[in-house]
Image (cartoon, rainbow, N blue to C red; front, top):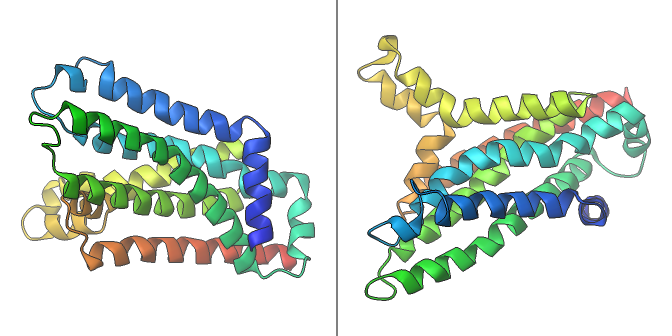
Length: 243
């Protein structure tokens, strides 16, 4: 597993992929927080990072599929997946190694945004007048969301030979799992007692719950379950190459 992890991390940062991913994430979040008038902290009456945590899931919907799209699709296209499958590695080792590498890159992209927290802390009146508990919960929620999106992206990559198709499939699935249930719950047929149930099936409800600063075990279990299920499907997709 760790050999696969090291190989993928090295591949990210030996080319422009890793730097472009981190750079684009920081560029977009920086524009949202400090440049665009509608969301700029400098034009706001209170210090908050809500703009970052509201925008980050949408950025992750495209950013993480861009990270994962090549992981299996490229090997499926070139035929190296058969060589990888014949190595003395279990399917779960291969999947976990690639999953941890992609998740690590997403976490590395998030790490510099802690400077935004320091900036907002200094801008508060009085200094430090912000809800640090909610911010910590939002970061935990983003990491869990990144893990879930990474698992979804790996499955899309494992099922496709084309990287573009893998990217589009993963982005669609991430959007559907995060916001799709909220959209479905608004349909007239689900109004009443069913709308809350439908919303609870989506990632957005659990992400917003954690973002309030209270890390509920039910929300954590939900995201972990999503990760486990999609990684299991990915391992099954990899196993078919052995046959």
